[in-house]
Length: 227
Ligand code: SF4
Image 1 (cartoon, protein in one colour):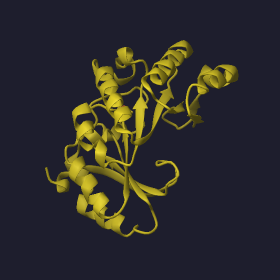
Image 2: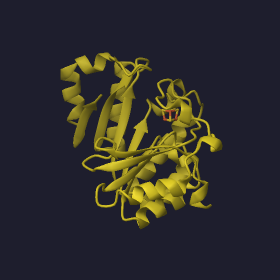
Image 3: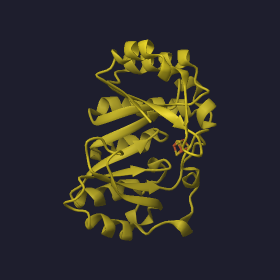
Image 4: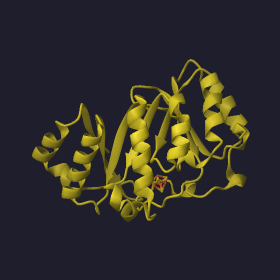
């Protein structure tokens, strides 16, 4: 597979929030096999080659950022949807950048093939793995995510695991998920506030329960709330 076949939905040439402690660019890739109820990039769920930015143009843009940014993050959509991701990562590494990946782990086999090339992974967990379809609308998605998470934890790569607190996730369920993640060996955890289509925060009761949050946070080396 040739990187020129990469379908790019957009680029942000500078971000301070998508790659912790790094100035970075973000490359948004088209395509995702899931349909999460709170997805903020639904226009990237399906591929649209005629609307894609040429990868060569994106690489040219990134090469003008050498010396200004430290890393490039592939996001989406689900970046692993496209097999051209692997050669594209190699292109970016050849420019001297660190590479980050935002993924929900939908393709464990592809993730296993590229993880050694990555410098940081932001991994989305949706809810308890057996009930993933309640968020993703796709049965079997939890099994794929679980398999990918195990690959991540065995990789010794830098990462954060994030869970977006959609209103449909009961507080008790969220605590069960956090405990399960902790048992699996997750050390860096982020709970994200959910936003509606107008970017307004949809409050979840877990964020008002400071005693509970303090208690669950003790199980992780790093635990933060975002949004
Ligand atoms: S996995 Fe991500 S990109 Fe895909 S539908 Fe869910 S939120 Fe959207």
